[in-house]
Length: 335
Length: 252
Image 1 (cartoon, chains in turn yellow, green):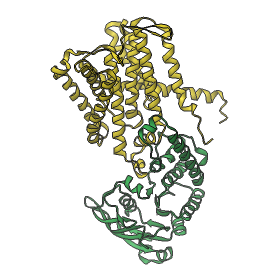
Image 2 (image 1 turned 90 degrees about the vertical axis):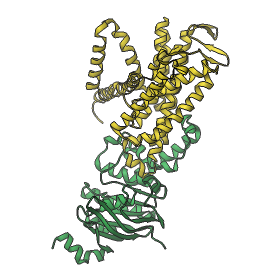
Image 3 (image 1 turned 90 degrees about the horizontal axis):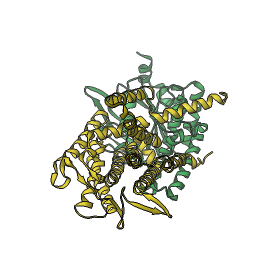
Image 4 (image 1 turned 180 degrees about the vertical axis):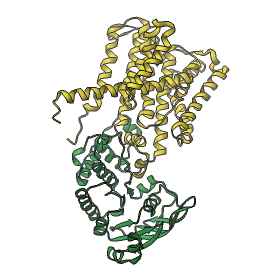
């Protein structure tokens, strides 16, 4: 009774691992792999954003800014200065953490709409800098990014690799890499949530006053989760750049920030697996709706509206409570 | 022996309204000390001042001889002061036991790396915190709700849960703001027992309460407020016979 089963926490992770590794059984063409890789990397950033939004109850409408900073930092360091990808990614993440901490300290004193506006401004400022620093970022035209490399070994979507004697195309290799990164991201996030730090974060959402009277320094924890979610975005942004081979300031755009937050809300705030579903749905939907041509955006909007009206808690939490209800009904209501 | 909580000439004004004016009293360690008074007398404001939620306009509060007027609520928790609220503050996004484990926050110092990689030190700390929290939930009388979502619990159970969370922080002094509000006679009797048991453990209890029977029965000393000012202070017997108190409560 006292000990909760560890499986309870691992269930979502195992489910996700099965899905990630079974995807290659169903798809084979490079376009689909490319899409799946992109989804996995963006989902990783969304998992980080969910720590801030879903668990700590704060908001960031400028998170693409951190994604873009991470992407550009890695791009510039590896192409212009010839760094290897991993040190660029790590130093970039540290730099973004410092930026997020410096920015987060003052703006996280704000609440609600005011916090939204402040984070929105942060995102805009980063996007404007990336657009205007033509010398280093290439401006609105973007810049090429070298392939991801580990100790001189390059990972390119166009390469050809062999693993345990199996021939693996570059697309598949990238997909598997992104999938593993996503699984690690989810594992770390789940460890964080189910811990004293995670409880402190959730209490900031549940009742800031209650948190403070039992000794939680709420300002410190808000900054901490803001930094962690920014680091998630930065790392995923860096990998995204290497994968795409070319980035433009659109990775830091307002539209992309909104897309990230919509994925969190649609999938289910505070549900790590839910927000990944949100990312999958929002990335795949435009592909599916592409057949409808000029009606695409109308249908996209309509689907989002209807989901939010009928499933305000998000896709996964709604489905979970629906299943729980059915189960208790079929159990005969003897509870 | 110096007083555990000492309040000197404490005042708080909201614009022109003097919610608390020139209030002084002291609470010795181990006492049950109650603050009573008619609605709007400034009892909750006084608690909010003592626990650092409001900044006083004048005067000071001392905890163990140290002035605490400038400290944040979380710094007061570190010095052994914890409280509950008239408007319950429960984290509805957590389970019952997680709410109590939140109270263990200060005793569970774990680094970010230990947490992210879920190292054995973290698991050990969590297990101990969970056991201690389950014990406290049984102590306050809501032990059957361990993994129930807080949002699915009854009002009375949540009131007890909030006390368990305050106790989880291992306070020297715990302030209970109207713990009996909304409880029926049976629940109030159980609460009276609980407060006695808390006091027996050597924890100083400060109480804001309307239920006269409860207050008179368990308090060592009482403070009566009226319009933000001290009307009377003393033992229950002294208060019961004080003509000013009788006038304020019965009109006259």
